[in-house]
Length: 356
Image (cartoon, rainbow, N blue to C red; front, side):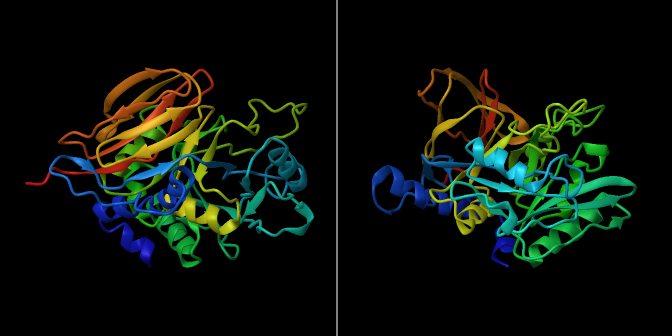
């Protein structure tokens, strides 16, 4: 498939990664479609992909109801996200596919449902979970002799349906190690921030944070995009659950102007999004010579490169911009926003070396 071929070359992945987003953004900012996406030719180190985005749609990609181990009915869960301004939602109960056109849910015109299922597998006795998004039929989980085998099987099953594979919470049950990620080359997304208290996104024992795993995968040539999710299980605030997994703690903002199913699924497939636990962007732009972010709140903007190295840290006022210029030796660049409201993570854009 084209998506599999995209992952065979880091350069090609970088050049193709944000084409849809860039074309949409060009309409938003410049008024008509044009050449905002390019594989720039420059004698200096430069970004291989350019894009300019100023419109985002908010959604949650990991949500449970009482169809599996959540505490509330699907219609109540959908109503919460609709009433809190989300543009799209995936219900991802364990080994239960929730279709995008589930009649009893009636999400209304402002909230789009996309197909979702948490494929619940085991590897060598530990939990290995993947969300299957935008699929056509239920997949269901199985047990395997290793996490790598489970990820390989799950990713292949999702790819067969032209769906989108999200690798869930690697540190949960200490189930997925860094090297295991290589077994799922067709996966598009990796959880790096979660509202669930048991998944240890910041690391545990000698296990690295999920953000560090993301950097490791990028260094291996994978083109995963880090996402934030609720992994919501609890809606009833009066229930004696400690600690609870309530909604509204982490989400994604995709690069799209319409919340139709096709636009959302294509944005997710390409990693055309940023992840958040509270920080927000008003605009995100990459030219051949610069990577610029506009935070909505006062923020410390940290530009991060290969192996998770901090390249530059700048504190900017709300609505101001922070910019990074690529240097020789940069492999990729991404940004992390740190605010009083939470954090946000932008896509990693690979850097083309200087030409002779």
